[in-house]
Image (cartoon, rainbow, N blue to C red; front, side, top):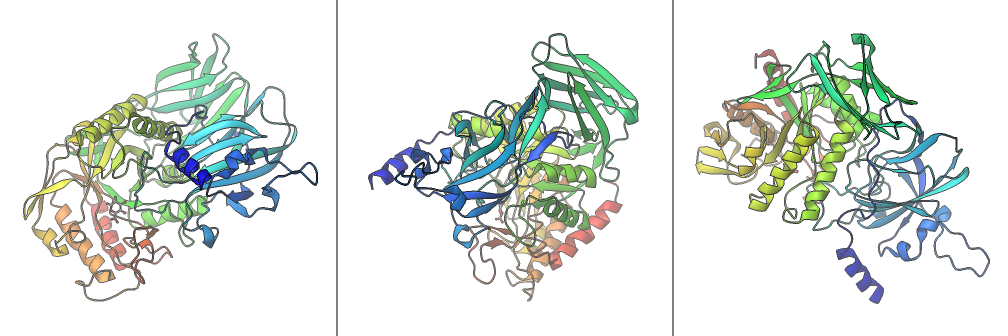
Amino acid sequence: MRRAAARLVFFFCLPLFAQTPSTPLVADPPSRTTINLDGTWNSIVDPYESGLSSRYYENAKPKSKSDLVEYDFDRSPKLKVPGDWNTQRDSLLLYEGPMWYQHSFPYTKRANVRTFLYLGAANYFSRVWLNGTKLGEHVGGYTPFNFEVTDQLKDGDNSLVVEVDNTRRPDGVPSTHTDWWNYGGLTRSVKLIEVPETYIQNYFVQLAKGQPSEIAGWVQVEHALPGASVTVEIPELKIKETARLENSGRAEFHFAAHPQLWSPENPKLYQVTISSGGDRITDQIGFRTIETRGTQILLNGKPIFLRGISAHEEAPFRSGSAFSEEDERTLLTWAKELGANFVRLTHYPHNEQEIRLADQMGLMVWEEVPVYWEIQFQNPGVLENAKAQLRDAIMRDQNRASIIIWSLSNETPITTARTDFIHQLADYARSLDSTRLISSASDKWQAVDPQHMALNDPMGEYLDVLGLNEYIGWYGNRKPADADQIQWSFKYQKPVIITEFGGGAPYGLHGDSDTRFTEEYQADLYRHQLNMLSRISALAGMSPWVLMDFRSPRRALPGIQDYFNRKGLISDRGQRKEAFYVLQKYYQEKAGEKP
Ligand code: GCU
């Protein structure tokens, strides 16, 4: 009892922010020298977190027959990494709490090589030890983090221990309530990244804002020698530019360039090589401009309509947190099949691989940080947490042409603290990347009268694009057909994206279009929605809710939901519902139209 009480007190005073945060994110282009640590890891479920006081991180073995060691990773159950633990063992489906991972791996140290331990994502709070030495902690379930381990690594056998705790917290980002499953674990790849003594930590190479023939950016080099320089090469454009590093190791550059511009129709990527000191990285980068003009969104200077779909990072066919290239390619291929040129990846940064695939496949991307529903907007630590997740998403994906919008939040309440929070996040995002659009999804619209709905959410002031979530015909007392009479107005004359609308239907449930949860009801709702939305003059795009059914703890209707949100146009087994074809037809027509 006393230990449980201590744990509870300990829980509520758990650090909101990582006590020993990870080192600045090391860019991870495919050209890096890496050692993959994925595979089958040892695991210990630890609901009372006794592993901290029992020092599980030492991965100890009894030294004598009378020695007391009350854990043994090698004889403990296994978990696959990457992967959530919830879908790997029935007993863990609903488990929320601390989980210990241990993995042994051989390593050979080499002179003049620095090594980083890079974790693609760990939901939600994690502590990391190497060979018994604590490397640090991380808060946030959907962005990568890394620690330098050059000194902690040993020649020969090494033991890595990671405690991951997906306990939901009132001061979390997201907080305690979400409409998606709280998949816990090492949900994305774990690897070692090897770099030379002087290495390229990160870089930003994109067209200058609104300048289709000027590349601008920066490179950050760590441990550069004074007076050193960096070279940026784009062989296909016969570009080789050199810039001097400041003492901080940073170099900024601007130079003329006339690349083929990246677009969904022509997702052109260029090989870009950056070299400095002994380090050299190569990345595939597309160049495009994205701006707004009045209520239009301009891609490469031309108005564009975003034919989109929202999607969770739920694995098709097997459910669980998606992580493989196959998972991601399946989801994006379905979006393309729908006729989409845009995907709203919700409500958290998805896997880097998915964004790189969107670059290659020609899909524009809305990337969002999990400021979702109610969080502690007045809590400065929560703002720092949200800023850190936003920073890491931008630092990871800033060179991806596909990403056109950074989204700061979804369906948050209209309070002064919230609006101020969003204002600060918007300023921070623009300070890190001034070339992309900033948005957020709001569901705080009002009925001015039965046929006139208005979105006047004050956070619109700080956004480039307004996102609107409306569920006319599903939530509330309006029928799908009521949408035919409805007009929308917006306080801010900015481009509008209908970021969510939709209705639920398990694949194969049929009936008349008035019967809830039938495919006919869902399809009918789509027809009326598309009719209503096409009458919005500021409409620049849409991303209906949702591409594929996904697991949610809030959806308990037996035989219909069974803990899945069934608003997908495709079932979690890949079956297309009637509404899929309604939207596909609309997008085919839209694609033929001049925006
Ligand atoms: C909300 C929310 C989604 C949720 C959806 C739904 O708008 O943004 O996360 O899943 O509605 O109710 O299905």
